[in-house]
Length: 308
Image (tube, rainbow, N blue to C red; front, side, top):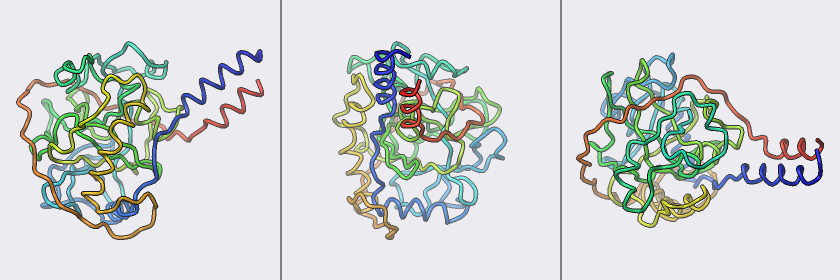
């Protein structure tokens, strides 16, 4: 490889290796550990049960409120110590991005909330390469279904994601439809997955371990107030919602630190539920099957490029 090509390749790899994540605040880390060690989510703690983390997982994942204050939101909880995995969503605006989404065989040209809510900002839709969005809610002809709006979670509201011992903020941007045999959960955009697990993530290769915590916040206060929806990079968009995400985490868990000690979660003042969106149209959406667990290979990749 010629020197100029090496420089270009290394620069591209460094760009792809961005991870705008932060250490998990101590109380949120404690909640993560408590949720994993607390067993199944059942009874009044389960908003709706019967969802699949993978096509063969047995329908044991739940929209759960266990250990959360009433009316503050929910998270995805699997059986035993499982939380959820992270399959990759490449739906939405297709005009930019790298080649990694091309491996997806079920990409759709729109997301559930993008067009209706973002056109006033001059944005056609969410872009999986730029916007760190999470797929939540299940709608379609299968059973069970679940609409996060019924518990006060607003479209495009901030979602906190704990992945690989880091905290990343995304938004609720898409829903799971009925194009699979079972109602699926555990999916996020390519941009969010890259922030969590690095550039080896692709449209058909995500993070298969059920160790990802997705927390959806209830209330209009969780809708981004200063989001740069027209951002041209993941860093620019995620940076525009980080301060508000930090405040939501601090309100819920009472901890603004960025350490990872295992102190008990402390709950702060709650906020009210927002009104439900009145758009009842269905976005037929998929959730992929089994994905591979992908390690971070940024610096290994750079070294190999340099040696080529």
